[in-house]
Image 1 (cartoon, helix red, strand yellow):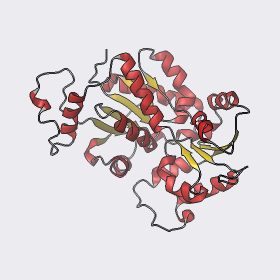
Image 2 (spheres, helix red, strand yellow):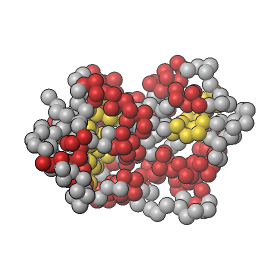
Image 3 (cartoon, one colour):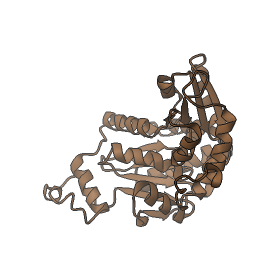
Length: 313
């Protein structure tokens, strides 16, 4: 049985899920996390459902057996669409949170009634997304655009410097792809008939928000899934009695940042089953550790030594 001190597992096909991990760490500062990027097998969005399902099961099994996770966040829209129902059946006792393009929240904010949705082809052509879209028929006009190659390009650019202020959007590979797909969707803006809300249907896309913003203009609202997923994860942990207390979290923080001294008083409060002398966030990858280290430092401010490579057959 998992303990409150057990970590939360988070996985994605690559580094894009770090955007979800960032939101989870902000909403659940007392928790421990194990993040796994299956970068050796990315991108999932351009593979078949059977392959993605097999990888999802293998990674879930690995995180359960090797890291004794108390909950799992599938921080990948494609893996959620292909396999979340099967994982729920296989692990009925595991609190499980998946992702889907946030088109329902988009309905609450659009004023023009035209909503753009960008994502991987695997996500946007899945039966799960098709059912979600059909359930909202007539409530808005959804302009759906698969963005082949964009998630993979973001992976490759993680250790490159940010574009210089004022530089042309199309000057980088990610910018050129953003430009191609945004222009294919039609006109963005807040006037009648324009797309005024853009759903980022892949966890990678928040990391090119500046390119997307330059293309759609300041009035268009972006909808992504990190914060809602973090809130749902907290609700599930509370319901299961698995939410970690603040004192244990302070000790884990002190282990991760030993010079901070944040847990000096907590260390003198006596034993607790949640006490830990390990860092509260571990990042694992089946691919390039340098890519994961770059993402960890750039987007989470985490040190390179929290990252390591693993094999998940």
